[in-house]
Amino acid sequence: MSLLEKTGVVGFPLLACSVVSLSIIFERSIYWASILKGEHRILKQIEQSYLNDDSRCNLLIKQNNYRPIIKMMESSISGFPDTSEQLERSASVAIHRITFELQKYDTLLTTITTIAPLLGLLGTVLGLIKTFSAITLGETLKNSALVMSGISEALMSTAIGLVIAIVTLIFTNIFRNLKRAERAKMQEFASLILFKFEKVEA
Image (cartoon, rainbow, N blue to C red):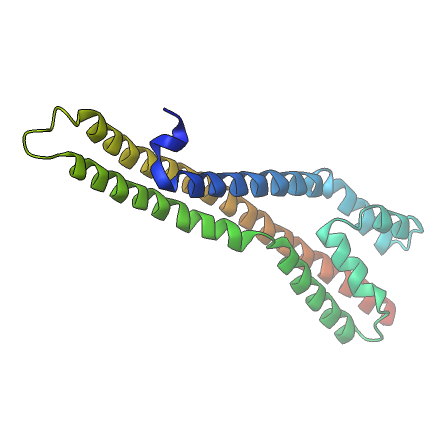
């Protein structure tokens, strides 16, 4: 008997949840790996070249403008703000917008985390109904295969729903922590830009 048959009618919704969840986890893992790879070294280079008015700064920004921090930096200074207040406001708007972009798929992952155990529970209830309907007075042995099928359906759907929810929850929290860390770095880098601007302004 296949896994889908063992989980009954909730098998296909659980399969859909697992496929969507794994696809998002795979895509976000690749995204964050590309962002974090060499990030510290690149940011150090940009920080030094920016503070020292090095001509390499613009080139480094263009080469790394897929990184959230560099996006924030580019967006903050692209409008050529006249005052430090304008720059601070521009950086704040950029940080908010980029943080929202980093939350991509968060709602969907949270929904899967919530709905997968409920689907498993529904499968359990349906499996138990199937089991009890198979148990009739004096015919328990005759319907033993149907009874075992109902119990298997009840247990399998619960287990699969919990596994999907647990795996999805773990990765959702990992991605949220990465987003928080990236936001903190953006705020730190915004302070650096503001410091340089105020220094020039003075």
